[in-house]
Amino acid sequence: MQADMSRNARSDSVSLLLAGGLSILPFLLPYPQLFQAEWLAAALGVTAALAALSARGTKLVALPGPALWLGAFALFLLALALLGKPVYLQLPLLGALYVLYAALLLWLGSQLAATAGMGRAAGVLAACLLAGALANAAAGAIQFYGRPALLEDIVAELHHDPLHNGAYGNIAQPNLYANYLALGATALLFLWQRAGLRTAYALAAALLLAWACALSGSRGALLYALWFALLGWLAGRMQAGVESRQLKFAAYGLAVMMLAAQLLVPWLNQSFDLGPPNHGALHRLVEMSGEHGEPRWQLWSLAWRIFAAAPMAGAGVGEFAGAAFESGLPPDLRQFDNVVWTTPHNLPLQLLAETGAVGAALALGSLCTWWWRAGRRYFAKPQPALWWIIAAVGIESIHSMFEFPLWSTHFLGLTALLAGLAATQRSGSRAAARFTRTAVAGTCIALALTMVILLRDYVRLNATRSIETPLTVAGAAAAARDAALMRALAQGPLAPAAEYWILLGAPLDRRDISEQLKMSERAARYFPSNALIVRRVVFLAFAGQSAEARRLLAQAMHTSPQRCQETVGILAQALAADPAAITPLLVLAKDAGGPGCT
Image (tube, rainbow, N blue to C red; front, side, top):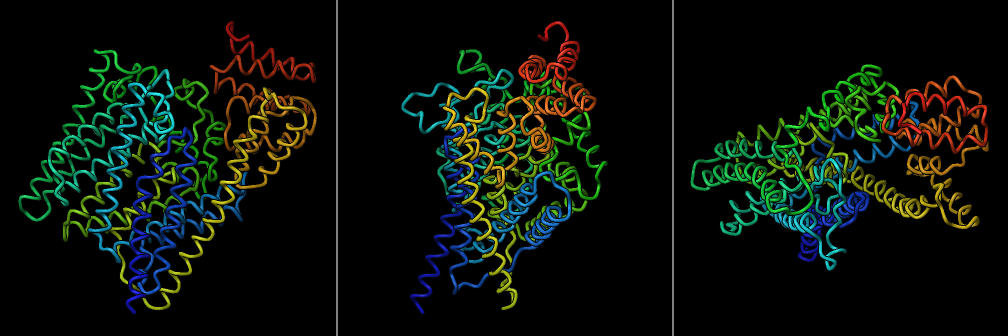
């Protein structure tokens, strides 16, 4: 008996440590792509769930209500895959697995709260999250002010952007970076109030987080500061006492510190010529309606139009970009050079546009259910751990109204895990326990198999996609071998990306013209970049569909006027294969592009 209890305790501890690893490890990888971080987060989440499941002496909690909503949403996506007409079957299938991963992490958080206690589990996750945020804050500062050669394998390189030279640490994107630092700031407040973290250390950590957040230039940081101010008021709802007042004023102080950093850090950088040219969040907020402002209202209006065209089931999972291109981008959205709008930067609108009213109701039902229950629980019996969970999930909810953090597995998994801590369920009957065990185990197996295949195909895709470009220097045998591998990848879960790269490297001639037309139609629905669309124009012209080719070319010139030279260059490459078909298109492109288009 004691041996079984000891084994179960070890399993619970391992599960909690793996969950803590999910809060820090995926956010420290110094890679430019997000795939590695997302894959690691999924692996840690599945392993932690299996560890919790292996503790046979521990009663399993029932699936939380929000997880059941997500399960229904996953079934809806499977129905879309089987009964709808997706351009790629892989997109709704992977979407369903993605949703099931969120449901799995919700259950895991609930199980950890039941076995370790919500306070202890929250303390471990907060400590890991704070450590990761501080490490990333330091990495972002090093990245911004000058990375020494010694740290090349530890800190990611800063890629200069003419519009926004914001730091992003090891998270590959400034907005996600600011998001993670804000999560770390909430963890700092919680640990300072709960664990007695020394005030001097807490102030130093807060200063580093606020400074690094200002280096990101993310406008979301301004919203997080306002959220901290609201959290200060919320802290006052806890039982009256010194600790409650301390947390309240600490939250107010952090809000002021973050806002002050947004003013002072860009000014100091500019005054002393530190780092690359960078505009702070306040400056970028003022410029929102200017030349380089991001026209979110136009984008949200576009998402509504896409939803109105298919209100029940939406345009299709992963097909927002194609639907946006086909509906015609507003002028304000065409000013960004070669940007493909794959999302409306708003969670409810993304769900409405891609999954329709039914899918959006199921997905948002999960989120609303959680907020309703967490809010009722907090106001009925406030406690610091629950305060922190609401603070962290609130940051993700706020960011989801203007960006798409929950489209990244590591942010989705962390959010679902924290939300699960506050969704504690009672142990159910034997039948309910069997259902929970079967559902959790089945989800883990499906996710594990998919992850193995995805990792294999991702490695192959990265190794071969350069071979498939027109600029390849590989020999004929190597190019033929890798081309065959790319065609094989087009049958797997990464088919959309594989076909996109195949088309970019395809010769512009009449070979396999029927297959090229079908493939380009699918890829254009997934990622309608200017280079891909113009290649489809060429294939349409070769197939004798001159009217459709002219229409599509005119739309490409209208959507991406800055890419006129690229358009003319692709048409010129195809000219030798069929001058009669391509010459009118070349003339049309040059006329539409004006004197500078040659």
